[in-house]
Amino acid sequence: MLRPENHGGSLWALGSMSGTSLDGVDAALIETDGEVIHSYGGSRYRAYSPAEQAVLSAALGRWPGDNLDAAHDVVMQAHIEALSGFDADLVGFHGQTLAHDPHGRGTHQLGDGAELAGALGLPVVWDFRSADVRLGGQGAPLAPFFHFACARYIDAQTPTAFLNLGGVGNLTWVDPSVRRPEDAGALIAFDTGPANAPINDLMMARCGLPFDKGGRLARAGTVAEGALEMFLDEAYFLKMPPKSLDRDAFADMIGLVGELSDADAAATLTAMSAAGVMRGMEHCPEPPSRLLVTGGGRHNPVMMDMLRAALDCDVAPVEDVGLDGDMLEAQAFGYLAVRVARGLPTSCANTTGVRAAVSGGTLSRPEAA
Image (cartoon, rainbow, N blue to C red):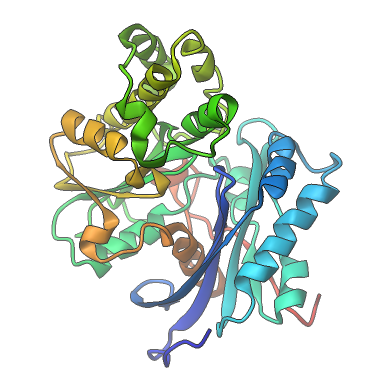
């Protein structure tokens, strides 16, 4: 897949993302010098088959040293297929998160960047989170520095928030008037709570479907207010950011809706995800003028309606400002790969709680592989 000519000093980076929803691998080109986004290029989506999803699902929560050969093969084969054929200068490879326990065992993204470099014949930046965790950070979220650049790219003039609704929800509040993302006052970022993961798990368990397409089941149901109140009593929502979650940190949500009908359970889980965002917005230094939503959750009109009803700011999908919500996270890791290659920080105290701004990531070259 060919790319246009570079702007002076910039690189074409091919970013990839395979999220905790386990739907597949996103691959997307971005042209950047690691600070300014110059342009976006082509993209590709490689879905996981049901059999591959089953292998990855069985590996969730497991750590290096466990028997993960089958899951490793799925991750590597899918990424090689997704990333082959692009004309890029380097690759940003996030890998597949299996477990995240930053104040315990650390963080685990399955996949080998050196192996990928050899297969693609391109330098690969990978293992983005470990350095942050070693320095006391949460290791997540990592997209905020990219969100800062996106706010500049769309010429935002006032504080703007980005909300990614993947398996987990993450919020980034950006003040685009600050010079650099690592500077004081530029960013606040944290995980808001569960987003699509519990809804997807419910749909698979009860309906044999991967997700609530168009929010149809949730729209047919009624929110169980008692279960919603119990959910919001969780101590996590009172904890000050930065803070992050594992995909299954709120696994007991399914238990809270266990006695409800399918439709009422879907409606209640959707409301829980939206309510986590509402609580998260209380941590913003000032209300954003706009909340731009990315990730699969923006395709759920029930989720979006709940957010609009709960929040005082404009809520819109990122497509409204010319961004690609399906590829934004893949583009983020392309952007971060260039920052790592240039020695620029990828996280700071206000995004992950790390003790000092750190450039996380390992660079593997194909000749070494």
